[in-house]
Length: 239
Image (tube, rainbow, N blue to C red; front, side, top):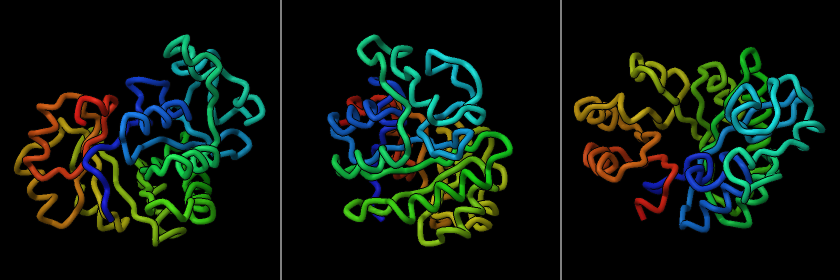
């Protein structure tokens, strides 16, 4: 698998509202070849691109995503919070994102982001959609998650799709977890790493990618340590 060193975070979320089709288009326009985005379930089990459990931060509405049907979610403004230029940008379905990725020729890291208590069905439906609907013209995607339960389901459902373990607070137990869920990569917060830890992970044969890196000096240090990719909100800073 060849994943580029630069991955657009939630599209290009420093320039467009995160996890929207507009953000994906912006990333492509800025020369990004792979992006990362989050997927979770609506109340009626529709897979959407969204990060938070609650709607408040990135829409003009409130409430929990897991308690609202798609017919109502699709009416929400998911862009005005970022800029008036994106007013009426909608929350996309995962299937819509796949269609756009095919048009733009972008690879993707799909983070399974289940609402609390919905780990199993979110992972299963995400895995099944990748298996059944991922465009054949694109490189094989990566399924990632902070949820160990989601990674287990993904492993059992689509073992042929690479997986990555996400760690944001601690690297404790990283090796056992990677082995347990047969992950090819570790994705971690960049400030958790030091040079020795990075060397240990890379020497063990795993891909190491870091989020969220928006300063070139930090990226240079990480690459020197053996990190193979960074997730960034501002791709233009690294082109």
